[in-house]
Image 1: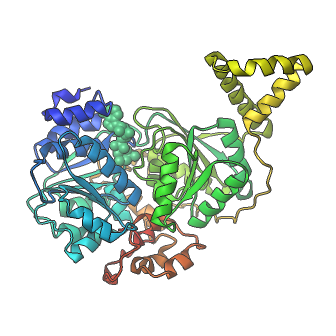
Image 2 (image 1 turned 90 degrees about the horizontal axis):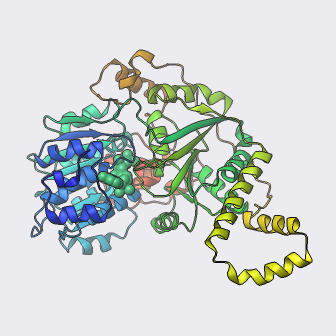
Length: 538
Ligand SMILES: Nc1ncnc2c1ncn2[C@@H]1O[C@H](COP(=O)(O)OP(=O)(O)OP(=O)(O)O)[C@@H](O)[C@H]1O
Ligand SMILES: [Mg+2]
């Protein structure tokens, strides 16, 4: 492993890296930083949570001259939350150097963004839709851009952003440095690479499995109507520090977060039909720990890096293997351990096995914890907390009352009652969720012999396995129109109808993440053809 001193980074950039607590470069950083510093176009693939942001961010902030007062670098991300987060990381990396960066995404007041643009940022981090909006308004000019990064490149393609990306890049000089990054590189990424990159270097540090090795993966076979009880028991048994629960649709996320609140959990939902203020507020609360359960659609599947996420629970099975990899990759980041549980209805078991094959990772079948096990798990955690608190010896002021109580009451009864209070017994409210249809079982199975390459394990070069995977995906509907596709274009126009129609539909909430919500008068013909969420986010 290389230390950062071994790269030819400027002292101010090195200082930022040190302050961020990075000591050694991760494998993707080790391989891509020198290439990027040489100005090589590249496609970088590495497991979730392994520092791809700094892999492109460091060479970028290192290269930019601080006296520059034009936009010289552009980073595109598929979702608003990710744009905000990447901007945050870039700003940390460029802090001592004084690099100016700005996130540009839909849902935020455009006038405010125009004002911020007047401060002459050198790096723009944006979602495609809103970027185009600024380009059309001539409030963003890309004629001086020298470096372009597409983070989560495959997802942007999947969301139907191809045309938007084409339009944006048509504004950027052809003589530029372009980099694509993602943990997954399905075959169709080739199209994007051929079009936008020049003689790119493929850097893949995906070992055997595409999902991070530090994630413990299990599934529970369960009927739709039992899922909520199972979820409550799992949370009780495992007592996550922070958990992300993925639901298939926006409606599901709304119902689930409400149900969890009724049971007394500190949970909130995130999906594309919320206002940007609501989205920001939910993310803030999750990051600062004022809620410990985030219920989300796939809008939260990509790139989000929240420290302390110990558990990911797929309440509904994800649509495709990539989505599975990215969702569970919200835990087990930066070498930490994580746990992922997936609920699978009997009719979806085939689909789960397909995901297992494509990701080349065995997902262990586990039994639903019994009420007694959940209870026991919870009590163990309370007992541990109690013992830790006792050892800290900060409870002196309670000792007087404790002695009095012990003189009056039975010690076992007393401690049991205290533990019950501490455990915070959940309210026993009856919950009924609207059932979701199971994902359709896939008929076509991947060819086991060639599966290693299917998720781009070292190659994305369009071999038969990739093609098969792509074909499979299309048939399975996962790459076809998202199920909420219907409303997407309206979303782009900013009319209320999208919201009205989609909130109860079985929509894949990619919708919300993509920022098209204030597309205003933009040409509708440019709306992504295929999807759903593509609709909203710029
Ligand atoms: N060299 C390093 N040493 C320690 N921590 C690091 C290093 N590089 C990055 N990190 C931290 O690791 C975490 C994950 O990084 P990042 O979000 O860039 O991962 P990623 O590879 O982009 O994941 P994803 O595929 O989910 O987007 C972040 O909190 C980041 O600050
Ligand atoms: Mg990332």
